[in-house]
Length: 423
Ligand SMILES: *[C@@H]1O[C@H](CO)[C@@H](O)[C@H](O)[C@H]1NC(C)=O
Ligand SMILES: *[C@@H]1O[C@H](CO)[C@@H](O)[C@H](O)[C@H]1NC(C)=O
Ligand SMILES: *[C@@H]1O[C@H](CO)[C@@H](O)[C@H](O)[C@H]1NC(C)=O
Ligand SMILES: *[C@@H]1O[C@H](CO)[C@@H](O)[C@H](O)[C@H]1NC(C)=O
Ligand SMILES: *[C@@H]1O[C@H](CO)[C@@H](O)[C@H](O)[C@H]1NC(C)=O
Image (cartoon, rainbow, N blue to C red; front, side, top):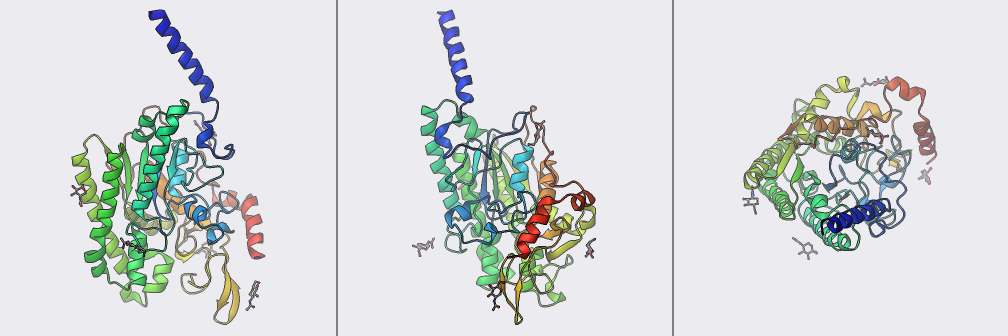
């Protein structure tokens, strides 16, 4: 009896070993070429799930609306990928750096068809999205992203029954890290499109946005999620587009030289978000809910820009015109009429020196600094405990090591800037 049991365990283990070398077909719409793990040490989390907007979108917006977005063209993606990679950035986003540091493949967007690989999690973040329905141009507001997650979970549970080689569902969902980073697009719509004041945003919008985030966090906890990184909003008043649209003189600016009204409601949002997260920690003592102070790290990077190798804090790298190199009508990569002249909004020579990428989004270098801070538990409260087997892997940070090395060897930038110039 005992030997039979042992044999069964042995047989099961052998079969499982063989199966684990075969990629689970059902989860891969196409043989996965680009998303294999290259790491030797085990990943820090079995899976990673991401919810939010363009700060974390690795391709949902482009999968839903093909050929409609600027980020499908160079110079987007030129720094790291050497080609457009469906991200509103010159390279990687914070979620990409996190995945790499944790030893996981870059996250597939949930809406991707061909080549998607959900064996280590999925990304639901969608560019332009917010938390409230019908407010921003994206249909993928936070609750929809949550519904997509629930759908993925149902499919995964079905799949697990037929394919024992996938990570067991309790580990996949219960051991995964859930990153939630959203809210700024609701407020941008409020202040730019609806013309609300900071006080109106604070009284009318912030409580509803916080409620939507709270409801999603509660929903995820109810689905078995136990490890979270909930991220606040960055110093959005320092973004080139908002500086261009909302400041007409020094009286509109705070001590950072950013739109005071915007940074004001951002701080209020972050304060309420932290209260909500504190409440959740009390309700779910078994869960680990870290808070990421995006505003704090953003201010640090602005104040001590030179320490981190930045020399442009508010001007966009890719754009044209005005004090912040931003024009709503001719944005990064586009050609159009600016003051009677036909001009193309091109990228700067070295995005590594810039905090702002295209007037609306930030550079890979900025995201790298945010990711490094968060991974080292700087600007993080209640950090998540990592398993002892986890060693953070920074070997891919940054794309190039120093400015001088970058200028000596930059095949990718050369190629992409000449192609950009021909557009
Ligand atoms: C760190 O990541 C790099 C690039 O993915 C990989 O080649 C290397 O093996 C990793 N190191 C460890 C210790 O896992
Ligand atoms: C959003 O818009 C749709 C279509 O106009 C409408 O049916 C729906 O009720 C709206 N939802 C909310 C929450 O306002
Ligand atoms: C968050 O949601 C929970 C469950 O619905 C509720 O008990 C709690 O009061 C909410 N917190 C806030 C700050 O709205
Ligand atoms: C940033 O550095 C470049 C190259 O060294 C230099 O030309 C430029 O003037 C600097 N800009 C600022 C704002 O310091
Ligand atoms: C502006 O330049 C683009 C690209 O070079 C060209 O296709 C377009 O016809 C030009 N428009 C005008 C008004 O000159």
